[in-house]
Image 1 (cartoon, rainbow, N blue to C red):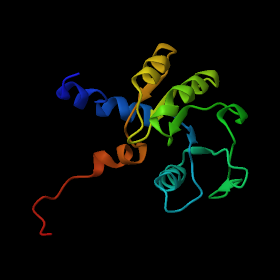
Image 2: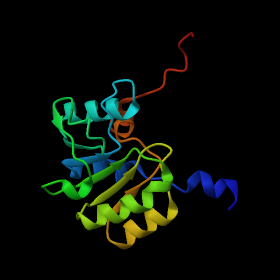
Image 3: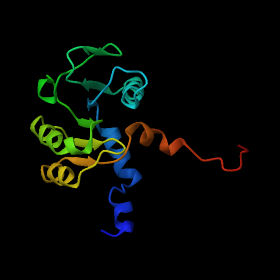
Length: 154
């Protein structure tokens, strides 16, 4: 694949991303961490504070709550509808997570920055899910309000 095509592989319109983030209410975060230094913790915190119903998914039996929110061992254990599955796991795991997202009836599969798999995207899209790969919902939520100030001194 030519490099120019790779750069556009996961190029989404602002309207597509905003539409997803406006439509979802419940987000299952696969790979959520209780470690406050991890990026997934910060993203979970912000999305929760904004008002999303966050469902952290972490198989470790030592992690029962993150920020006071019940932690689920797997997507299959979640006892209510899931709008979006956000993935903080290696790309190699994304296909299996896509299968699970389809099985639980999610509407969106979202791979965090650095998390992407064309086969997983095709599987999810073929099942009717909207797909976002290699993006961060926290960043996308604030992108419309952020304007670079290139004139400021360093």
